[in-house]
Length: 229
Image 1: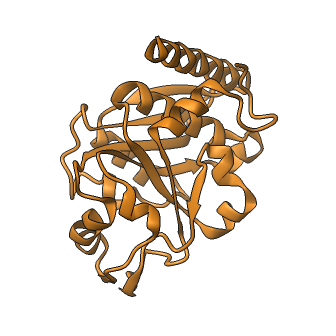
Image 2: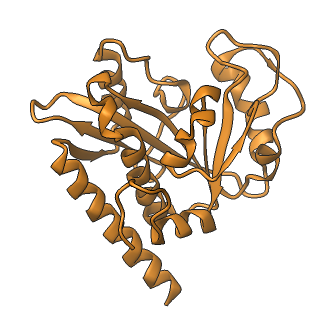
Image 3: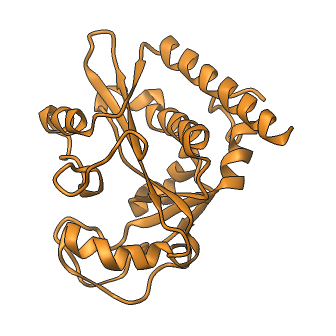
């Protein structure tokens, strides 16, 4: 019965989000073609290129392992992206995965230490990244709303043990991590001996477990964010 209640809560929440976005003139599209994602990201002026963990240059991301959400305005212009990718880590923790992958993706040299969350995150793990909102939509709280949608889809699709991402220190301290739905925030998410050019060592690790996701799905977490129970 608990599983059924979770599914019902998530489904209602997703419907509420779509209605809210529609009221703000934003439509959404669920996608699984990462080559198309890369094309769209690289074609948008003033947007950073697609990050390495989602690039087809480094990974073959099958539909079972990844999805992305595009928000677009009434003119069909892409104004927001959210991207998710699943990794089956089993007993291996996130810190160990980073030791194997991050140097290959970014260069530099990692320390053997990491933030506490990276040492406890394992199992079915989802990376949440490339959260982007066009400046024209800055006042719509599109980043937070779309993030809740992406987390809801991930919960239904994969029932992950953990979801994590990185966030700039300034955004974490401003409370944006909570607006996105992340309850756990740790400064200096990854530790580097030699910092890669494209990695900010002050970025925070944000994460949540499955129980956090389920709790988020069933409750209105932040005043004014949109959802009814």
